[in-house]
Image (tube, rainbow, N blue to C red; front, top):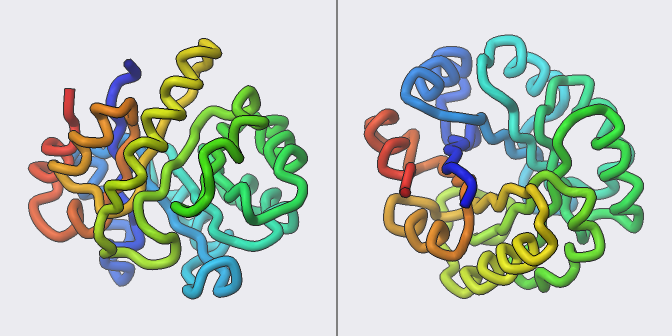
Length: 216
């Protein structure tokens, strides 16, 4: 099983002190920084665009894990790659050209990720599995932080882990939504190895909370 990676979600940090927050979670043991990009169309919220990602990249010493919750990501993928995304994840529901977008990410030398809404079957990502570096399982509805973990998504993690193992692929399974020490253990048991946590990390002692997510 792959080693555990922790990716604090900057959506929950203090944006008035973004550089300090990035330095603090990095010093506290974060492996990646998770950046949520929302467009107000694919999800009912708006967050940040390429200029802010570029600014984050400039002050970050660890990789940027960028999650595009946007319609037609093919229009913007170049801008987010140029801004400094190290891992760039799109939604399988967000475009009619999933393969083309993933190929563009891969051709840039960056890691390509694919995710789906909780109601979308994991089988939807299977045709693209050979192109991926990461599969993100959403354990809340995308668009807002602070939601309750959806236990009915655990079988999806197990299914994807079995398929990845069967094909002998080198793919991270990331989980985002309601992650804390307890739910991270549940997800790890099903095969996940990358944990995104916003409120849980930034709502207390950063180092202690990150360490509690680093399950064996």
